[in-house]
Image (cartoon, rainbow, N blue to C red; front, side, top):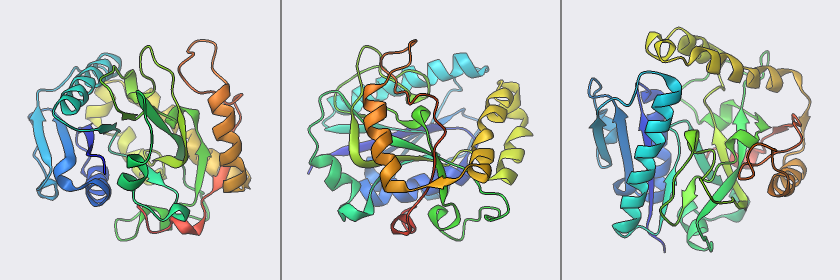
Length: 278
């Protein structure tokens, strides 16, 4: 079995980080989680016990510069972990979860240990929304996937998150500079950052995020809720198969190492077999 680390950087985001630690700790072992808090004005939460959690000097005050600095730092940390003996490093935000399709009946570590990875591996991106009128406010009492059932197949979240060699991630882990990406079968990156209207409104009013220029970004991404509410939900297995093939072939004209899908807006309903994973 391969030795696999997962790393992330967070700021004032215990809601997602708690779930992140719970999920990746179960899949990879808490001792293989590396968490960096962006700013020494934060506290390391008790649920991080058993992980490798560190306070770090705040990286930048504006979203673009801060994001570049954050990914440069995380790229360096991933390279260091690989040099220390890890076979693979997973780099994701605290609201992102790489999941193996339950029909495979294997863990994330077992799945990744069986993969031949040159530089990186990508999971197919699923950006979760909230179907207003059907799905209520999210709670911490039940798994996310028992409360949210609709996601847009999003090229933004088909990221080269899993690396086997030192490399440089672009902002948001969206690409690796100088390298193509390869999308794995039956592997999904589930993004929950915009899956609850109430929580999104709270984030809009977060002065710390607004001062860094996140307001426009969050307003733009709030469209995920509208898509989940208004667009017809399509068959998961059929359309994820199509998307995986399409994104493996099509590229945007401005970035050959990012996936594209003809600007299609495809919402799928997540099968019940995923309900208890996250």
